Length: 248
Figure 1: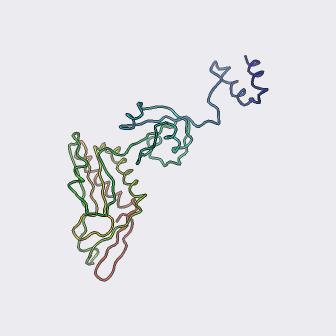
Figure 2: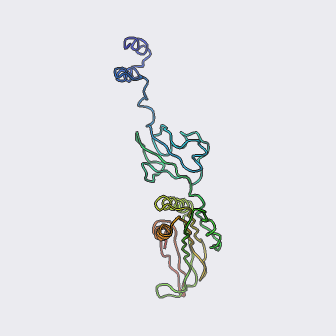
């Protein structure tokens, strides 16, 4: 059998394929194994609406980086807000993949929204966004502008954000909280621009089957938002103003 393969492949300059066939031929396997110049083989998992769209929950594809996974699936345009996890850890699109990796495609959190807005926040409307028949508890946090800060009389606040980065980061935060705490839905809205005394600057609403999960996730959401999301606050007070810093 090897003599026949050599006679067919050697004249065509295909010694690379011939050598790749020798080992599996002796092992009793098909000689046409995946070649080294092809992408690594990874397992892809999809959930919720993506699973229904695809018609499957798990399959294998060839992809060298996370960014190559979606095109390899042949499912049309990539959904906005899609997140990726490699081996159950969130990963950037330029992450290199290895044979046997598991890549999970995580759609935006159902029922939630993550917005930066220049208008007054409607707390009741945001609370309605997380309503869910499976929820046994809804926790919320409303941050408001106070009249005094660090011994100074505040006139108003001004918020600025790197919007193209901040909104996706809020969505990612919502997805992480949902996975970690088993939530039903998450909504986070933050004001931009001028915010007057007594007005809401941020509203977080979270629903979950149990109150402990909702309360823990709500506290974690505001603490993470204050330290990682690219948002900046200017305090305008009697006699001057001061930028306070990211997420303050």
